[in-house]
Image (cartoon, rainbow, N blue to C red; front, side, top):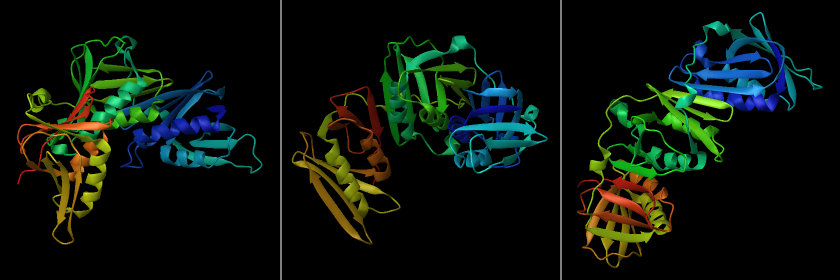
Length: 368
């Protein structure tokens, strides 16, 4: 093979590919990136056998061909080459990289592996794809993916649940102690599909290649999910398992509501989290008609408290939260005010922006 291309264009695609290969065994072909030039296109592929990346860029083909090369070394080389056109050729098990216009007489040789041994990457029928706005969908991912479980023994909770419900697209994530839910309607038609559990790594990859502008395409086929943005296609195996009935987790007919500024609560939590037990991470939220008191206590170093203004007409309530769950939840609320709604101080608490938007968060208090 032999082709000429822009260094920065190829480097960008190889850097994206870095997120899709296996790093456990440097001798495995899945640590390699697959390159194939034909016509005036170069196809780049990477996979860890669960997730895959495919993209194409414009090149000038001199000799068509294909090969695979260790991705990490190729990225390192590309980062240190001068900008401009480069010539890449493969012969005798070596990939040669040479800047065309350079006074440094640079000549790089990387060992390659036979392209025929590279795993086949499955595609998806074009008629299964549907379009969604990039910006809106990435916002939905951002509002939910932070709440997934990191416990691999409950594998079905390590991904984001997606379903079509009431002509809207809904995303849900929970780790058993908190739940994030968002439901949004779109101008684009969403076809009916069976609910799926999407790996967070796929959603993170989708976010990394998204420009945040225009639309992208999404498709589900069997046990896989696919997405196309411009010249790039990513895919992943879906998570199998029965997702819990999230609607039963979201409390209804809540008796009491406390309204406060998001910035006030976030700053108070951040300050008082300095003096909480490192093991339990317990922080206290006391609701009172005169204000909300945020407090922390560390038996070895001291204690702290801060009162912030609120609107509240319920009974005095002392609630304790895991700070590492509370603070990220509050940070996801994009509004000047938020509401905390509940029935009892030990039951699930609902956090919503004020005025209400299309997302809510549910957080379980810590028990005494």
